[in-house]
Amino acid sequence: MKTVETVSAAQEAVKPNAEWGSDAIVDFLKATAVPWIALNPGASYRGLHDSMVNYAGNDAPGMLVCLHEEHAVAIAHGWSKITGTPMAVALHSNVGLMHASMAIYNAWCDRIPMLIIGATGPLDAAARRPWIDWIHTASDQPAIVRNFVKWDDTPTSVPATLESLARAWDITRTSPKAPTYVVMDAAVQEERLIGTVRMPQVSRGPNVDQPSASRQSLDRAAALLSTAHRPVILAGPGNRDEASWERRIRLAEALGARVITDLKAGIMFPMTHPAHVAGSGFFLGGDGKDALQNADVVLDLNWIDLAGTLKQAGVQDIPVVSATLDPLLANGWSKDHQARPETTVWLPAAPDDAVESLLDRLPAGEPLESRAQMFGPLPVDAESITLSTLVKVLQLNLADENPTFARLPLGWDGDSWAFDQPLSFLGYDGGGGIGSGPGMAVGAALALKETDRLPVSVLGDGDYLMGVQALWTAANQKIPMLVVVANNRAYFNDVVHQERVANIRNRDVSRKWIGQQIDDPAPDLAGLARAQGLVGYGPITDVEELNDVMATAVAQVRSGASVVVDVVIDPGYSPAMSAGLTRESKDGNENDDN
Image (cartoon, rainbow, N blue to C red; front, side, top):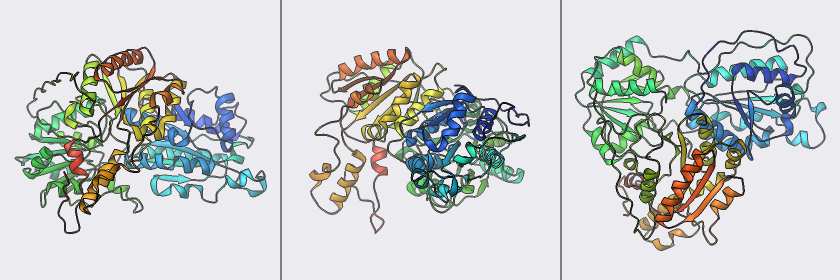
């Protein structure tokens, strides 16, 4: 994984050999040291494209060609989940932005930094070509995504464009992080430079200066936590570097706290640590509910849906220390801010900065040894493959590897794999936008390309089919990765919902599959991978064959291949996921149809 060291760029003019507006824009991108720009080609930024190729030699940033704008954003999303830094994305006018909007919403909900460069036909109507420039120009193009980007602008000159890009670069890297969007006028890109054009001063890599909590609030939080007898830490999204990981462990040991993790956030605390509460999932599990009910203080480290989680646990009137900057991003349009939590002390800081400050105020705890991880035997005599069977096959074949799971399906049992490193598992996509998985898998694998980690993504078949063309970029860029499709040949999440509704209404549950199955004919998922230049295996329905194929697939990934394995599994969810999908009736009672 390559991360860019934070350094200040010199304040200087655009390079002397720059001739066009788009040359200056490329000089700005070089000043940020962003390594890649993901794009689907479009005429609205033909000037920028020429400058990247003929002025900059397609190097730093290099172009990642994608087959759809939504995939370009998803790839940048996956990249940032690993690196913590923004990738650049270029979108073709209003039509490209509309294509990309779902993926931008995912990145917004997941608080991902991203420098998105849009483009438009000439804003000066007299400069537009007939027909095409008119339908690809909008009076306020960013309005399409303004409610789920952190900042946007539509500058109309080369100096203004450079300043807007510099501002967008600063804002996207400042917590709370989210994508920013700057539109480049096609006429500005193709404008010949006259005289000296000043380059804004920018820094590279992570932004050093971030919002922080006051000394008084930190003192109050430390006093409250240090007197607790049964504290619980809710470990939400945070940094993935080793230093932050170790500080979270030290804090839990200093407090004698139990720690609950969330599969949506990825792994933020070792599941092998004795403090970790079993049952990590996309919803709160039974053990987590018990831990919260017995807690006397809760420390929220940027937890996703704090109020909803406490409500699910039936916990009220408990002291809560909340370390998050998320309230600063709420805008009212999207409800991704969740229900309003009632907190005793709010620490307006990035969670890992709060952890570091709290450690300075607390005595050290006793280090605890990790628990061993045990794998069960492979059920080779099984008549069909379940998701738990697939997990065991992966465990056997990845036992000598160092895997990073970029994505896991909704049915994954959080206790089936003891993630114990900060890059073990990256979490979900933020917005629940089906189709994001393949692109995020490619982006994460690209970020891991020069490391010893083996990128693995376990995707549902619906997610895979909606985003499958993103995989072409992996083949094109020769990005090693393993994609395993847990293929239940249905939109099973909706099957579960239809079953619940039918039971509530005393209707025929057997008809829940109608309009939900991806079958008759079953799509050739491995064939879709092979058609794009990847290695594809499947559909696999036999456990012994699956074990053999998985061993071959892992070896091929280690040799540099991009591999897809289609595994046909029995539909089903983990207990925590099934419980989380239960909706309350109007009288407040749960409808349990199990």
